[in-house]
Length: 179
Image (cartoon, rainbow, N blue to C red; front, side, top):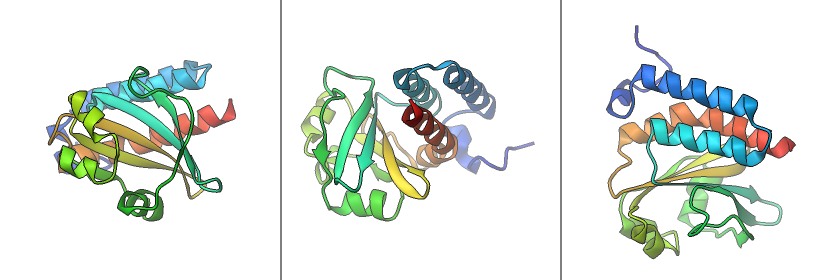
């Protein structure tokens, strides 16, 4: 019997048993986590096992101060977790912050339209991105940033990311905030 909570075309990205196993591992890892980094590590592993990613980061936002902060990265050499950057009012902002929808780009040219570090992204072998908004209390609290090779994030993978990662991302962020 198919799982009605998952998109029909999810089999293009990950099987239901595989996603169930990955979610079980995530749940166990989050339950055992004693640090925010351990919680984010669990979310990163889940993302790579289900949707796929070459680069995974989490940016928290402070809309009052209009600042974003990279709070997690799986590539600290190229994307460290230090400092903040101003939130820019652009098309990306409207999609992710205004409409609370995922931003998706599948070429470096599209990425370059909204991110000033497109050259570095390309140098890392990435050329597609999903920025998945994480809402807490109806407000944008963070984005989960998932990057892979050009053209990787098909409609099926984007739908899988939304279906499989939204609730775990909310749980991870809520856990990290309480520490």
